[in-house]
Image 1: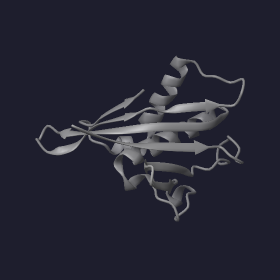
Image 2 (image 1 turned 30 degrees about the horizontal axis):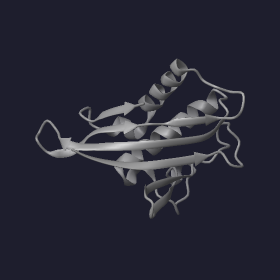
Image 3 (image 1 turned 45 degrees about the vertical axis):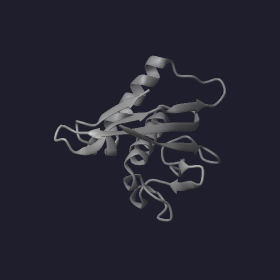
Length: 149
């Protein structure tokens, strides 16, 4: 099996952590020499100058999961100021014997402003909700295992 990973970094910067007031623009790092600026699709307030989550599978899932998490966090007034993920896609053979992505592991790390924290159970529930509502996750075959650490 092969593993392919990306790193994702988002920061609030000058935005406001409330619905419709923060940017979804973020950076996807494939290798030390290959970085892209990603965003939501133009229909969702993203810039057409940047890539969108549909362009690569591991990046799409990581990016979509993050944006869904941020929307949930904003609705709950969680003061998120940073988010990082290391998404790892594992290649193998599916039930038809064809090579495919069989597992994608997300490893989100959320940073809050000083004085705020979410306990492990609460964070797990919000991460699970983000996964359930993620468009890309809902597009994947049931055979692709998605693990969120």
